[in-house]
Length: 43
Image (cartoon, rainbow, N blue to C red):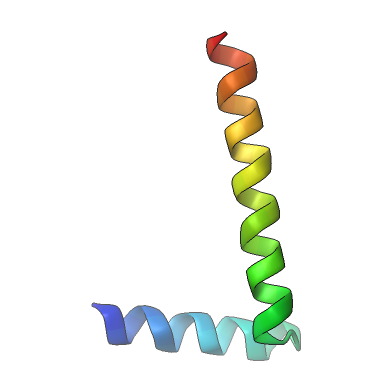
């Protein structure tokens, strides 16, 4: 499962032409938005 996920992420980044650094920033921003929405709707 872990190897499949690594390959999936690598192929996705390659498809969009993004570096690992850009992918990490995207993940960070998605987490911040998701967390913000959870806090907004629960409190």
